Image (tube, rainbow, N blue to C red):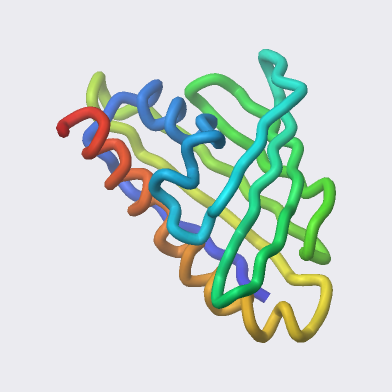
Length: 144
């Protein structure tokens, strides 16, 4: 199954990009496949998140425990949902004041074959475009 790694240098400070990634509640504003989010049990180093993904009339929720290292890393751990497994990380490497190398990794498999056939290719494509979606969001917020 997919093991996707994407890396890109973005013309924004590390704290700005990190803040966008941990602002899960804003995902429905700029991730078209994400129709709803909820965040709870927020602490300094972790929080619980629930995302609702929607595609071609199919709606699925999944919950994650997101472990964070401010401005350095976000580790996403599956707690429940339509996946057999889902492992994902974001790494942020400052390259001066206004440039950040962002690395995104995700590996997943849906728990049943039908969902894998329908949603697997879409989720793979979405995952490959994840950094690009956050770059566009950063441009809209910080240069708009």
